[in-house]
Length: 86
Image (cartoon, rainbow, N blue to C red; front, side, top):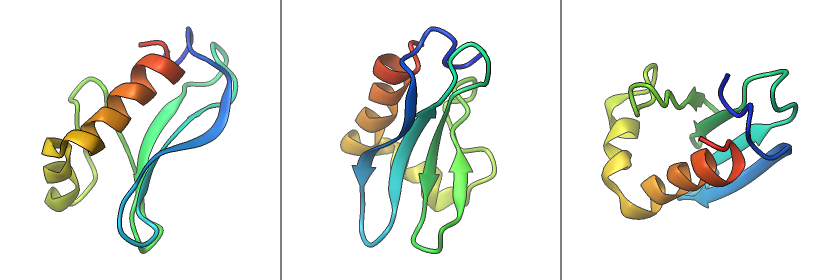
């Protein structure tokens, strides 16, 4: 289960882009409920990160292209290691 060995975290923003876009990590109940990393765009659309594919499966291509940005990628890596314990 994603985040089972992680830190209890309600919601933490790890990256902010233009406007309201951001990356958040949540792990409210480690070991009981899966944690998650998601990207939220300026229209409040939320896309979950899939650590298996290392992508946002249901997001537009433009969102997945952002994975090549160092700061964007670093926020996801921090979420996975520091908060979700993966």
